[in-house]
Structure formats: structure tokens, C-alpha cells
Image (cartoon, one colour):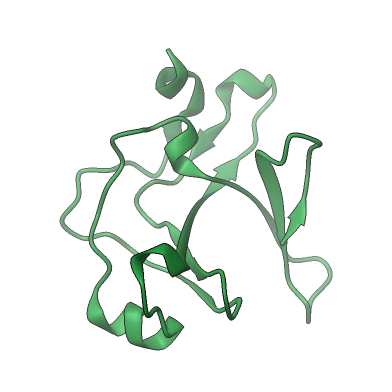
Length: 108
């Protein structure tokens, strides 16, 4: 995970095995403060999350020109353990989130 901007709001999630594979990600709580869901036990075990504060949550962005049309995938967040750098993408089944959530709408 590499910083994409100086403010460290956007990051590049870069594959270490395939250089051409990368995603722009951000913290979804920056634009959707009421975003919430529960981690399933399988994810907690796979990532070896021992405390809630171990987990970091990111959303993959779909960058569009102009940037104001950029969206975030809230339906499938990336969960990372900040202590061991393990991560995975979860698909939220029950939550009413969208795969194309407007960042601008979230900041209004």
C-alpha cells in the first residue's frame, strides 16, 4: 500500500507479484461517517485480528473524469490487519451499501 497523494487520503494498493495490478483505495469513513458492518469470524481468523483496533477498512475507488464523479465500492470493503499486513476483500451480503457510492454525495 503506497500513498497516492500528499495528504494520504488516497492510496495505491499495488500487487507485489503483478506490476500491472493496482487499485486506488481510501478510508470510507472520510466520506461516509455512518458506514458500519460486522466482520465475520472467518475474516477475523484469516487476518488474525485480535483487537478491533487491529482492523483497517478501505474502499476501492472507480476514478472518473471529472474526479467529482468518482465512486467508492462500499459493498465490498478491503479489511487489513495493520499489524501483520494481511488483508482481504469482503462482500457484504446484508448491508444496503452500493458498489458505486458517490464521494461527492458523501461529502455534502
